[in-house]
Image: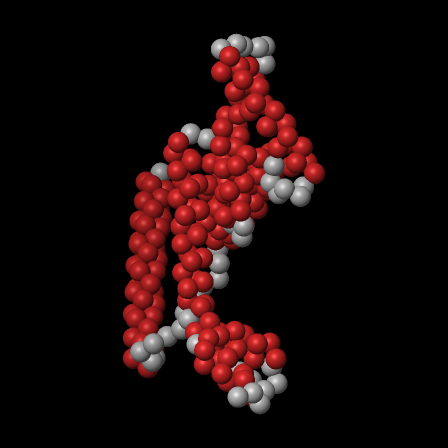
Length: 232
């Protein structure tokens, strides 16, 4: 019985000793690998040029963000298209034209009710309708800076939906139009200062050149024409 206890204790001690030796060996190997990698990295950094080119592939998160951005852009465009159609834009669209006619009737009906201090069963329904048109006009204000027909669209809204706007929206529309007109004036002024040089084989440029000279130097240009035609 004592021999069994002794042997059991011996096995336990040997197992613990072997386990400790294995852990020590693992630590030694890890340290050796770490030192080796440090030497390799140091050597590589010493031999490598001062500037290195590095790039990384887009992650799934980057791709998802890109898809979300494109989706948001498409949704905004579709929402703008539908919202503007409710206002009657574009003017050559049949459905938009019908929406504008319907809107004008509601504007008139609500205005007459307020002026006459009368009411009718669908008054609040019409009032909510007008509030939605106000929101669509505000959507237009957000899109105007990047809209290819910004000035025309702004004038359209002022002409047809002024009744649905509050004073701040009206001012924003007017400020936008005024700013765009100033840009056009500046562009026109800069264009008028251009001197177009004539070319022998370009009749269009020759005509523009003569027109430019005629505006700047009318007398001299007429005299040159007379000399060219053999007149004294």
